[in-house]
Image (cartoon, rainbow, N blue to C red):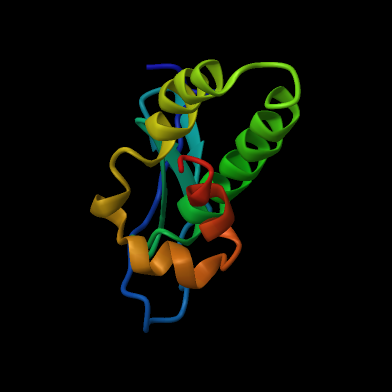
Length: 119
């Protein structure tokens, strides 16, 4: 276990106020600080087990990819742009149904613009 890269979280319901009885957890020789959110297997999880942090990060990545595709479209043909889209953009949204597509659309209305790039 790498004590410097390991995070600890205390999960709670969304309706309960945050009560921190402890500031850190001690595991063997490591002192782990409590975090409100953490990245686990590429997905941001927070102490209320909702997707807000993950959606925010995903939106930033999709916006960046969309901008890059727009710039590249001036120099590359449509077939090449579609290949890049399928390998980069689609990989980010491939499991979006697991997190709730509707919530993502409500969080960031301009996401429709990025999703429109595929057509």
